[in-house]
Length: 255
Length: 321
Image 1 (cartoon, helix red, strand yellow):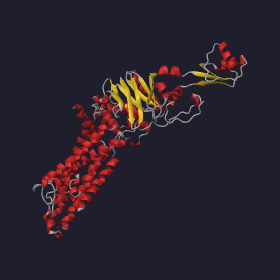
Image 2 (cartoon, one colour; image 1 turned 60 degrees about the vertical axis):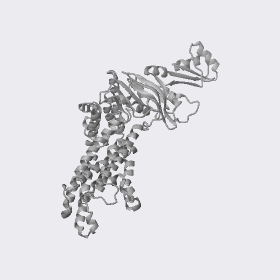
Image 3 (tube, chains in turn green, brown; image 1 turned 90 degrees about the vertical axis):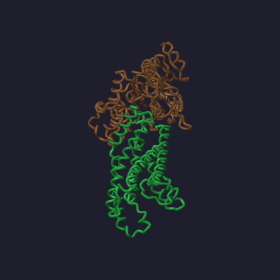
Image 4 (cartoon, one colour; image 1 turned 45 degrees about the horizontal axis):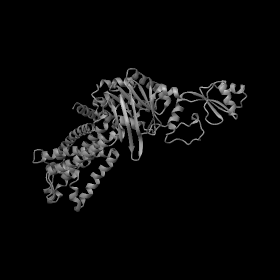
């Protein structure tokens, strides 16, 4: 137990003594809030020209979270950096010489980094919610309205899970560069393409980011296969697979 | 005490370390010598539980490395001096390690002082020279005040003062009863520091013996004589009571021979000589001879060349396998 606590403290020191990690999280916050405010302001301005159906399904929380599409990439980068820098710098060898039990090393790193990502995600989520509502003017909602708090918390959780998913993938690939080049297209291209074609739309819904984003929505389209809880479960399943895969590779491979 | 037992590492078809067994005894400096690519770094990584042996095992006082609690307090290692986070200050790079093994953080300042990096403690190692990185790596190895210190090519990239400093440091550690296991591709370097040597070449164990013994057996001067009248020369040597080896029909080799006396002897007996020279077989030569037979990327050489004339191979930096 004491070795686990020591390992957790060491991992916290690793994150807090490098500037790049703090910067990716600050950048995630700024990007998400700025883009969301901009999109909310545009929606507020053009609200009256929307169709009746669009107005009926208008989701002020999801709107205030729209910047997270970019913000999540920085959380992804955070997750990739936290694990990948061990490999790119070669520090993995001294890390494992210091903490030879690989499960202890791996899970304490993931625990600390995910906790940091969760705090950053929640701060971002609440900041973008309030800023977005401000920009929505008369079409805004309040944190006390039905499901709004759940959706906002879900936004923070979503970001933490994206970071954790990225950590697992990076541990599997053992390289920041390869991990980024797998994750970027997955989140930016594959999901978008599958989603834009009606035949594959339902497949896209089961990808980790789409599933997770269900947590942020107040209202789901009628034909959506699952609700926010289902979305959370699907995303958690993806994350679990990535984390476990990362562990198996770390445990098996030479450092 | 580190015991390496029948250690073997294969990468696919290629066997990098082949059935290597030796022990690193406490209180001594054990030099681990071999040409580049001989399998030194791979062996050291297996000793630290970083690489998994294909077969065989390593025991540290009877335990697996993986089962050591807070291993840095017992074994400190420098495997790759460049393996630090370039964006984290020298101090913080060590602090991270100290925390992981519950080593008092005050030790960080002490070891940085010890290796002479106090002034740059709060700088990022991005701009460190290889020598500074090497010192930081050694500081990391000393952090837990360990019984056993493992250093992979510690003098690589150091200036003469730095090299001197590392030698003194290792001797000092051994004097205080610590066990030092240090690798090098230079036998001459080990001759100055090691009490015991383990030589490997192409993944195979070639020698495992006290340094003094190795020096004794391998640092003799030899006198080489070649004469068109070998029978007359043989008779002359016999009368003088000098024993000689006969590498071929016309040649003689006299271990620890006196070149002047042998020349005079030939003159007195009116034996014509075509060759008379003294050959100082250095330790490096003995090492070259030992490892030359198995050196993987050996340069092609004429068959009748003497060991002294062999081309040294593998002077580049250690492989980063």
